[in-house]
Length: 286
Image (cartoon, rainbow, N blue to C red; front, side, top):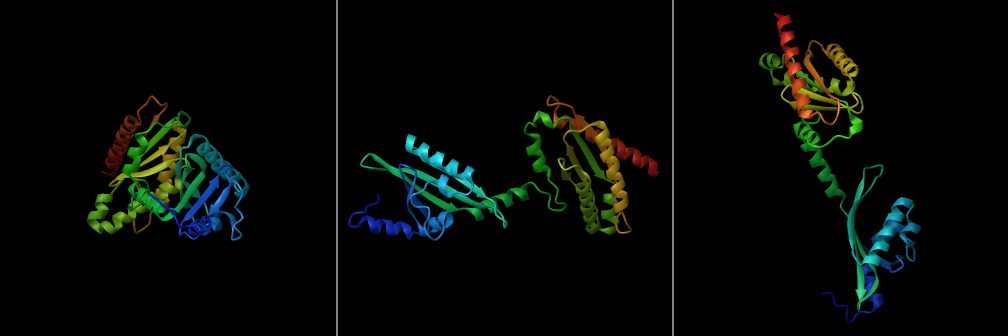
């Protein structure tokens, strides 16, 4: 329990203003009355221009200011505090701040709101990087199977259907690995992935299923658009081939026309067709 006995009000204010943290106090009109130096610099400049003002008056972004002010009104009305993390985009990347606010009572009477603003940018950036790594295939830069399991486990909005799936399986990867080494096999996979990224529509998703298999998920698909995309992929693989590595892949597709169709079942059908295409290519090479 804090005890302020023996200290004057001015001394208590001096402690708060000098605190190595972003601390503020607002009265019952939601106006800033005391702010730490750090908090003042962030919000109002070196002249301490936020004193006596509400968030609506100090924020250049009116939406943010109104949201903060309405949260203050709610705390004053209900006596319940709040806590959340806000993102602030900058040219050098987003900044993240944890904002915590509680009502302040003295002798049972509401005095106002005390708040603490903590910079959690590094923590959030680390969380984002760990999440990115968990859903990204490190060799190709495409999404990985973990991401697909998350995607297939949720319900897609109806307006994204029909959804087309294309399964690709690299031809001759085992031969390349056995004859020339895994360095060239990895190069083939990276080049296949690069051509996929260049070719698919902006709203499509590409992932490496594992080994030499890839998957493309295309919203708003039709048989014609999927056929055109597979033809373009074949053409790009051929153009990107050279004496170092030859690119080729067997492909199969299937389309889920509405939300009642399981994407897992659609994937199985696309996979079946891919193996049929691979068998045909093997017969042609005999």
